[in-house]
Image (tube, rainbow, N blue to C red):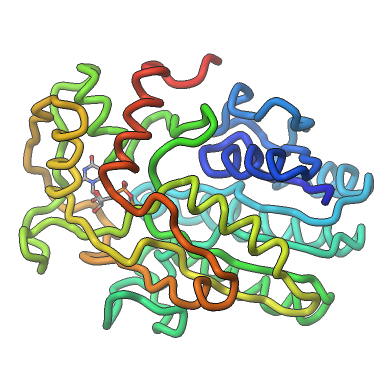
Length: 325
Ligand code: UDP
């Protein structure tokens, strides 16, 4: 297929772009390079420097004729979204409004969208199925829920074949592509920066959550496994349907357990300091991925947290300052 990967210079988008190329697809990456990196665009992909908020450019690019869009371009930090809700809605909801309008204007048939576990808020039960109540507790989660809602209506109205993948936590590296956020806010890359000696310690945000060790529990999935789900979603998408799949390993690890694993993998003590809770963080998020396993035959190949962190560590050591600018 001929595919436009919007946000394909970011962490997950670049990995998926690389996997699509490896599977024999033609790939064009569209990215504004605000959070993405030119060096993360895989060899073999064409590149367009464009913004998802620029409808005219999106339409012009899609007019070349594509079989589908994979849309990763979004703001994705829970804490930042609490401070800047309008910016989150503009980029995440407004950006996807543009993607849909551009797809409609050009007759582009398929859409795979990056959604999130944050749409569920504080769940009544874990692991969380797709049928769980949708009660986001952050502007980030609310913006992604609004977007999923829009995609459902747009699939029905315009016959788009759409799939939303609701990511839980993602880490690791694939094909020389890894995680490089500036500033970095995610637990695993920060722990590895401490192990590299780039930071003195790691802050633990909240030790009084209703969990066995008082720290938040998350479900960490290898980016390679997450990426693979996008290729399956693209093949399975059906005109007029909006499918929704949760993506995680189904196992939860606390912040302390993640740090302990990072200590084992790196051989570094990774000192920690206690810090207040971060706004918008639910205590426990663990995925039920039964639906995508049953319907698309997806299965994680690297479910082990130690492997996930080891692959991230290898990339971090090879790129101690991230991608070149
Ligand atoms: N976290 C932490 N210290 C940090 C960064 C993150 O304690 O320096 C916690 C955070 O509160 C959350 C978990 O680690 O409970 C995972 O956070 P991350 O930002 O990696 O992903 P998110 O769950 O926000 O998608």
